[in-house]
Length: 327
Image (cartoon, rainbow, N blue to C red; front, side, top):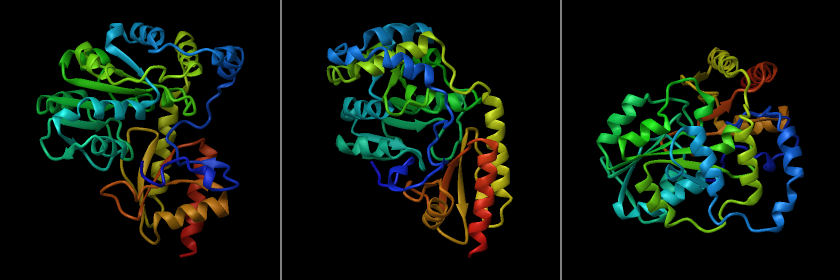
């Protein structure tokens, strides 16, 4: 893992508005907390060695078979499992800039990077740019590789068309990564899953550790799915607000913003570094942004923000204006 990831508010005191994490920050999880408070007895017993009951429930929700679902302890756990399982393919390809864990996981298991490699990783929607590749382009990409791994962790933060599990399974060589952590804003629970053709997941299961997914996470996953819990009740309005934030930031002299199809966006600042902006906002305004300079192919001038409430977004734009006035 790279140093300086998002949501590092533990390094700062007095943060009141967090723009650094792409996860929606205003979720009402009170009912889930109440439910889990009544389920604490489960911590006195081992969870299922493999979370088959949750996998069956996900399969019914997605309209696929249970052996086409594999639940993991978060999407990052899934990434490392996949790298371990398919390291015999020896080489991988990654499109940059993107999430660093694909590189880290593949290198950990002895794989080398190269164009046209057997295994290709795609983050879609992509972190940190917010760009989305349409399903047809992904299918074309799959035809050029033995295995295409598509990380759809931010699939619930866009209205752009994405590959469905059924479509991906039909291709035969595509594995989708899903993040319940991000879908339901529960990063502390660590819960994700893979959907793929059963033969591919059968290979992955051979590397799964027993009791890898804890009992409270399994209970939360089942509760959220059974109640069809929706994190963002008006996604289109939230994404409209993200676009408004992008336009406001782009209107600040010295700030440029890349087009995005999600709730977060990649920006650059000319008169200072992202680190300087981050420190000033944190210490002077209690706001936290993501210094994106440690993404491969980016520069010390890149930063990422995720949209909050309209009043928070307006406050961020005002604060950046104030920071630039000091330069």
